[in-house]
Image 1 (cartoon, rainbow, N blue to C red):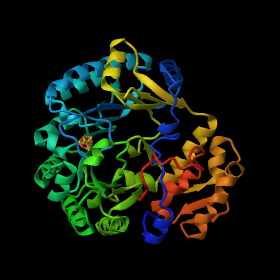
Image 2: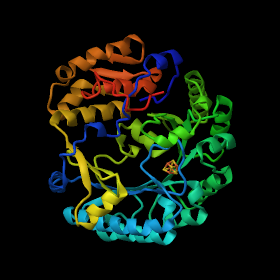
Image 3: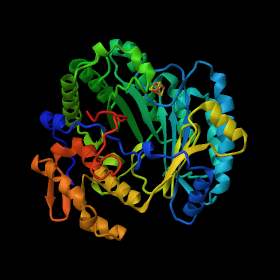
Image 4: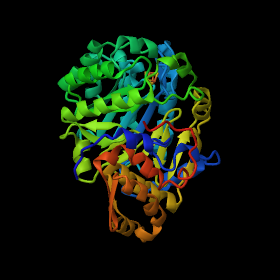
Length: 460
Ligand code: SF4
């Protein structure tokens, strides 16, 4: 497949709809509080009968300061002593989860996210990884995808060295914007020097992939200043660059009210910022993977996409297919067999549940067969930008053409606009349509096809 991207502002405006990012399907809006620990435990029992590998996620909710734009579940605090009691609960949860799992199941993926994972001390990080190794069957051949989110303000070369020794081999760094005025407006003061120290150390100590996150749409940004940031990031040659559109939803995330809306770039400015960013990244050799993600041509994500082996999960795109994801810590979401299960979001509630020797699940969903089929087709569309309804149907034991007759009809608008080519049973998203793949995916989403909830961020 070819992996180019073309930018057409008029078409982007036409198809600019609110929609989920499809790191899960159904999305969290469909989770039910009637789903409980017993439902999850049954799913684990079923999953133990499969030959699927394991993916582990642990959430560290603390951040030293709060970035005003942030929509993550985090606890801003300067009190480092809050980490220890939380980690104790995490270890207790690990013990409970590991008792449910077949101990021979190999952990192919591990991800530490937050919040700020390196909010915890180096000694606590060592202990955390020891606990992972005690309770689960972690790989020790460096072939797994063991990744961590890094705030460069909370890590230095020594931290990076330790993380590599502990088995991490991929990292994602939050940068967002290097412009000092933008940084002040969003309450995230982070120098280029501290960012580069971490990136250079990651290279030196052998991290296999380094991702940098940028955000456009923040106060005081414009196309000139943002491209300066992009160029500065490219100096350090990350393997991947993710360029998120800032989602301004102050009613859901009150800290966003602390930014001046009048300073935020207009829709047209954002489009120009995005267009220039795409141009810069493509000129530097990066390939558009999809959903805001760019990667170097030799990065494993790009290779996996070329081979039709790319997947999507809560961490975004991944090359490690079909793992059961066991998530630990407050707010985290597991994906096991045909269920999603989310832990309590409030730290006190989470703590109380774990202290009562119970898993901390408070909501989730068991997928119907139709949900599973739709999850799979949305995944293939977003990862491959192409699919064959007949072939897809064969894999699922359905008549793919008949099952998705309505969707194929609805896609005709995209065909008429040149975003998609439909030939017989096959569709292929064109370079100019790749930015709108989420809107196409929504047509397969029975929960969002007709109603747009307003709870999701705008696509552009
Ligand atoms: S962006 Fe990262 S560091 Fe900033 S508040 Fe959110 S989770 Fe914390």
